[in-house]
Image (cartoon, rainbow, N blue to C red; front, side, top):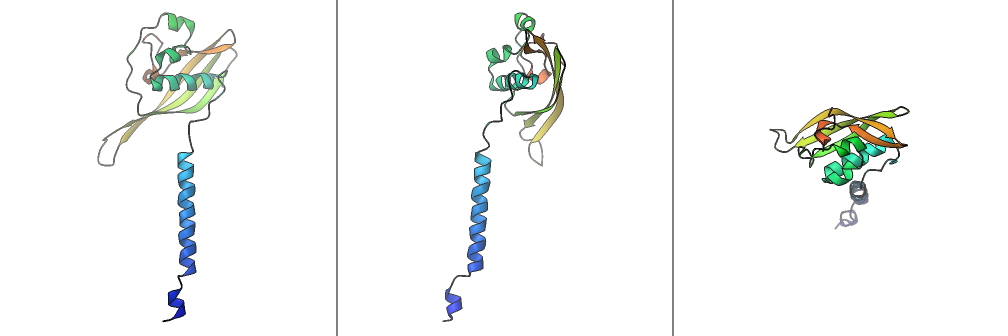
Length: 154
């Protein structure tokens, strides 16, 4: 028997080892992503982030805390569409002395969308905020994140 045939090919072992390391690194990257980084709660974007997270989690009580006091006082609860398959990303923030606009993209995923798999709907949305006694509060919300029917929906 030839001695070369009895030894495993070192190149093959090195290639398999590299592939194994890449698979482990990819798995670590995917499973360690965790929750998104929370923005400063004293900023308009931070307020919108916390409000949207509360609405998506179904915690209307927590979400209400981010609405203006007038809006909370007059809130007629609104049964909004499902937020189970929704992703929201921050696009931009325009901050002025006593008001701010936070622009986001809302992506909603739908199962069984056709021959190519699930479909999604992507819309640009806007939150308007006002500063009251140094704190930011939401005065208008996009329709798909509305919890009060009288919240001057945009």
